[in-house]
Image 1 (tube, one colour):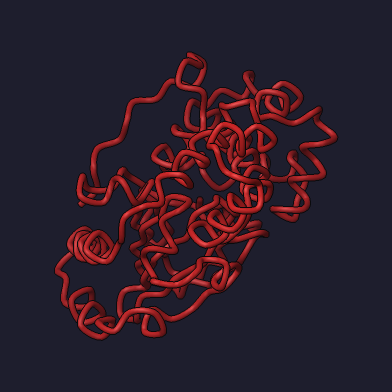
Image 2 (cartoon, rainbow, N blue to C red):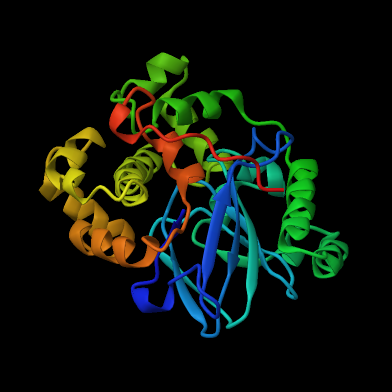
Length: 296
């Protein structure tokens, strides 16, 4: 998931000369492999963007340059986007990366590498993206490439991921028995498909449960609904202190700092619903959001 620049004045959107960010559901052909796609257009000043761990990987391209692959993150990573730049991207679901790149996903953890190091036909894709008439057309080309390159998912890992979502409460201890597999084999298959083991993935997805509540409250402009202590427990933390430790470890800031940065950066209309809605309890009426249409 995109996380706002710690310098929010550089991330305002919706005004000429400034930045915008629109995130949507992927095309039907890509839906099994990606959770969201996005278009980001940067204004007249470069943007330093922070990426939060979300359990998956990202294929993204600053138009005019070759696509890059951002592997699964275990801590926040930063990327500078040049002034006037347009970025199109695909956010892969946890468990997709291994089949997409044809190697064990744990070799790509915390790596930001050129797509040419992974896929042979990157030069052709780069040309197609550069020739696209609009950012949406470029994104459609990128989605088509990823959908055609992705391999079948490991069904066991896919079920493990489903059970580690932040609206589940079982955690990792019950997974081996639930999936009829040894803890060692589960860890091996999870690392091959996702990049990290079940425990690390659980920590990351749990943090995404907190981030989802932050983004939903901003989208609803509901400052009165902010309750960090309640959100911590709902996302699976023991208490707010536990959330604070994990937030510092994975994002490098406290929950309060993250909330302030997000509020300053995203109240201008940045749309992150495609990422945060799946991380919320489906039956939680406080955060009910309509599914955004496909961006293609």
